[in-house]
Each structure stands twice: as structure tokens, then as C-alpha cells.
Figure: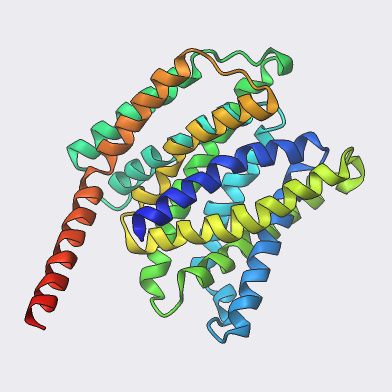
Length: 312
């Protein structure tokens, strides 16, 4: 189930970069679009869980969900949505792959957790793959703004890394709360922060040039990207090492680059294949310990079922 959930999450998140780009290109203000997406998704999930009597709205009053929402949703997606005004969706997904590296660094610097040598090596190799993917680095349409936008995305990944670690802490501190409930609460917090930022910096929805495209983008990102994808992410964080689910940031460039090139005419350069291969090697090494643990658990489960069947 963990592997299935991970693959599904990667496929969903791999498509969201292009969906964000489509919304921004349709004239939907970036902070407004991000805020509506996450607040609506969080609210719908909270109401659904409340109807099933499996959630308490008191989760919104916990500092854990507030801080997680600030890092995982507000900080990360304010940077990403703004940057996609000046940068291709494929390149945005590649730059987002710096997230797991920041998680390892935060764990080492803040939590004093020793990083396994193989995981550190994998992170360095994955980062080298990202550099290979970035080699073209010429988005002349926006001049130097593409470089500023790229740096903003990388800065946003620091918030993502902090949010991922806070999400793990929140799930441990509130074991009675389901991953879906925690995810809903943090998205609502991140959503209202983004909407507040929109009120302070943007002029509302008057500039939307293609309303239908903007609404399709918003609905897809809300229902599939946030409600489905981020719930899977939160579920994986609660059951595995925090780095494992965030490595979708290494896998998503394959999907985002292909979709951007195929559906939106974004440039796909020769080094994409080589960079993707290096990134994949980095992902496998970064998660070597987690993968071994999953395989051992699977083997033990099979052995238990076999013994139970034999004894019966």
C-alpha cells in the first residue's frame, strides 16, 4: 500500500505544475489561486470528516497544524505560484526537487540526527541530476526574471522541508488525529494565509483573461492535487521516514517535463534524459534504508501469513 500510494502521489503531483501554469497563464492571480485551492480543499475535507464524526474542528486551534500550514502550504506554494509566472512548469518541478536535500540538512542541523552516508550520497547525486536538468537555463522570454523565480522556488523548498518535519511531529503528538484530518487543518491554515497575502498584494480576479481555463486549473488542483495528492503525502509522512514521501520532488520532473513539452510546447533539451537517470539513482540511494525496511516488513508479513496458513 505504501508503494502504491507513493506512485499515485507522484503521478498526481507531476501534473500539478502544468495545471498551476495554465491557471497563471489564464490570468488567475497566483496567491489568490493558491489560497482558494488550499482553503477550499481543506474545508471540504474537514466537512467530510466532520460528517463522519472523525474530526474535531479544534485541530485548527493547535499550533502544530498552524506551523505546518505555514511551512508546507503557505511558504512553499506562495513561492511556486509566483515563480511560475516567469518560469516553465518543467523547470519549476525540477527546482522543487531540492526539498529532500533541505530535509536532511534540517534534520542534521536542528534535530542532530546523523545522516546515513548512503542517504547523503543519494541526495548529492540527486542534486547533481537536477543541475544537469538545469543546464539549458535560458528562458529569454522573461529576461533575468526566470533566474530570480528559480531562486524563489528553491527558497520555498526550505519551507517545504520544515513543513514536512513539522507534519511528522504533528502526527506523533496527535496520534488520535487521522492523516486526512491533519492535512485538512494545515491546508486551511496555509490557504487563509495565501488569501491574506493576495488581499495585500493583488488586485483580485479582475485580470482573468480565460475564465474557463482558470476554473479547470483551480478545480483540478483543489480536488486532485490537494485533496487526493496531499492526503497521500500526509499519510506517507505519518507511516515512513519524512524524506521518503518528499522524494516525489525527484520523480515529478520526469512527468512535468514530458507534459510541459507535449501539451504546452515547453523546451525539452537533450540533457533531460541524462539528468533524469542521475536523479533516479539519487532517489534510490536516498531511500535505500527506507526501501530495505519496507522489503523486510513485507517479507516478515508474508512469513507470518504462511505460518498462520500452515498451522490452520
